[in-house]
Image 1 (cartoon, one colour):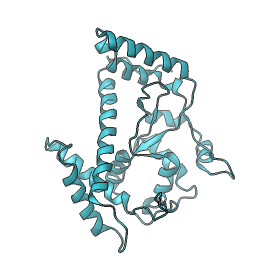
Image 2 (tube, one colour; image 1 turned 90 degrees about the horizontal axis):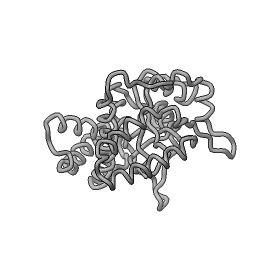
Image 3 (tube, one colour; image 1 turned 180 degrees about the horizontal axis):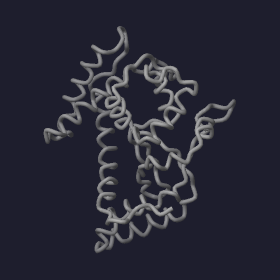
Image 4 (tube, rainbow, N blue to C red; image 1 turned 180 degrees about the vertical axis):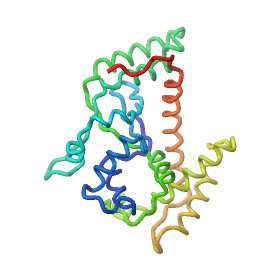
Length: 256
């Protein structure tokens, strides 16, 4: 099961309402989030219901058929009931097929790969009707915030608490934006991101300390480094999916 740092759509909508650009929202960020997804400004994914459970990216055009009222209602808490917006994996079989081809068909000569591939495909076919909840990776959110040059006003999420009852660390949005900036810069320089984790964490934390409101509780460098590790794990998984998409022959688009 993937452990990448991620946001539910409800959490993402709530975060949007904390930025100046979206502070006039009447839907707690719900309709604004849907428009961003439809425009491809931010990308969501879901875990395909199979043994491996690969992350499948949801194309922007898939959101165009989603009624805004239905989307909003699924992100709104109803008394005593947790509501979720769910996607149908059966609509994304071409994306799953591209991932499967890149992971199994290319190495089909290997008997072990053939066996695991058969098991994976069997589980996917058996569970294809099971709906899944989309999410947005934290690194994707940080990229969006940076590219859109969003200015934070305040957070509208309920204050989280640690398992010990203490207030959770604040300013994660600021820290993650700085982390994304450093990751992209070092990747462009061809540096080994695995070896740069602690250095990136220290730089991001120092910048966040200057940008955050006075008295904000900040995590330790080691905590930020662990978050970076999870982000890199998520990046590696999605990069593999992207590569399989790029390897598809011309004319291999979605059939609906």
